[in-house]
Length: 291
Image (cartoon, rainbow, N blue to C red; front, side, top):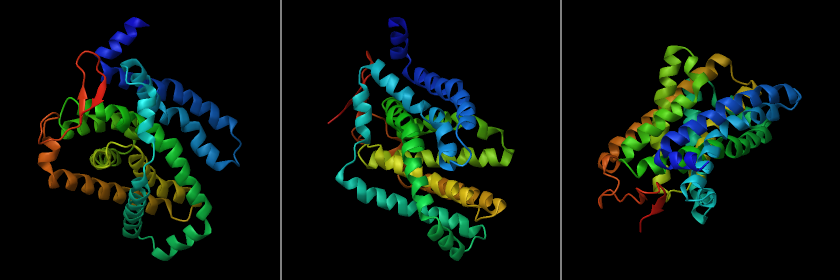
């Protein structure tokens, strides 16, 4: 055990990646198969989210283990989820922006505004339940690892641009089954993950490195499509087209953020101009905030 802890201290990113992928695939997939058969068919939401829990909490669990091994402590990582007074306003704006992006993708794919209104009114409870479950299951499970642990560690060593690219590449590979789709769909998905990664990095930085706004953003990206798949109110081909358009919208947003503040993205991590607030202790690989 001491040797493993020493190795994790010397290779924190590799250790995190190994843990995240190992937990999600070696433990998460068997649990997915078991839970899918154990949960009764009529419990639709439970069957949708429950079996995925161990998979999506792979990054979060890896982040918690690395925090404990690196000396920063589990409590420090979990504290990043603590809400602040400004999170209500920020969260509302994020939800509004996410709804607008999803509506734009759906409308561009031929779905009418009236049909969307009718679907939401008739299934408001289901929509709210999906959003809450996305927050608790998907958003926290992934973001506690990706933007809670991985991005800060990468950002302490390299520019925001490089840190985001590395995190995005790992995040893309983690979605293994999605990479066996049609080539065009895989390329678009990978590009959108990179685009969203830039959006999430920018949001994480602008909100004082808090995780709750990013968790809300992650949830609102996923909720509309999960919700509409369950209602069956949109034809599968149109829903697929809309999902692709939404990917494009988020990709354009991410690229725009990079081009808008290019110097901010490429600034070295410890330069005064870069105002990068994270350092990594070279001996312990633990993180500390810089005033």
